[in-house]
Amino acid sequence: MAEKEAQLFRTIKELPPVDYYTSGRRTCAGCGPALGYRMVARAAGPKTILIGPTGCMYVANAHQFLTSPYAVPWYHAQLGGGGSAGLGTAAGLRALMTKGKRKMEDINIVVYGGDGGFADIGLAGLSCALTYDYPRLLFVLYDNEAYMNTGVQASSTTPWGAYTTFTPWGKIKRIGNDRLKKNVALIAAAHPGIRYVATANVAYPLDLMNKVRKALNAGGPSLIHLLVPCPKGWFFDSKYTIMIGRLATETGMWVLWEYDHGRFRLTIKPAKRKPVKEYLALQGRFANLADEDIEYIQRIVDEEWKYWEEMDKVGKIILPWAR
Ligand code: SF4
Image (tube, rainbow, N blue to C red; front, side, top):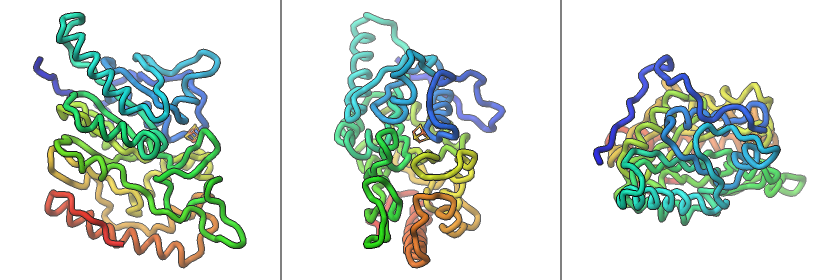
């Protein structure tokens, strides 16, 4: 069956007026993952099946008081099972259509999993799913940089220096988390034959929603690694969600790129990067950092930025990182 490509958006005014992730949820005020869900579901459209591995976006959206924000089919997957659930759903639909048991049509499968679900516990299943050829199978890693719904425990995408309940600071140890953040999008891009991988940021809705469309049009499994500020776990006032998201990209702490059929490019380039201090200072999880710690983070960002610019120039991914 010939695939019908969904059109890209040129302006916010072109966005469809219908939401498929609506009211009926119990997320915190200013929740970045909830905003991201709404944008992803809207870009994907009505012919979509959503799958939610355990995480904030399962716990706060589905399991209490019999309310649900989903206006398209949705089901829950076990925390580590997002990859296999997406793959199995795609395989099942293909089998039913091939056998003539349901009509041939394009159906999107979007698995919306957190950093616990895709960077840690479910990374193996995600990796497996990315090696298959099922079209319209999109994995969105909504990255709030810790296990928030169980009490803000560190994950492998928690940034260096951040406080979590697993990485507290105190008199003896000034630094919270002393591991550097894992780059899941680059891991996904290392899969042979992968057609589309991107990073995104909930503070850049048009960029995010066009990446959703490109991923679903790509002709194979795809991954979007989406940064989503979390007021509860990052310790900031809920009115700052979008401002903090923007600062992540404006400082170079969260770089927006895509890898589209083997071609790398930066999708948003700050004209002049702001100091990382502007991003860190707004978040209580970094409150204990001394000037020398902030300088260390700045040095890493500056060093990596040279690679991002070079990759953008040559249109390829260059590894490894220098640290
Ligand atoms: Fe959203 Fe964070 Fe609240 Fe979870 S803890 S619902 S991710 S704001």
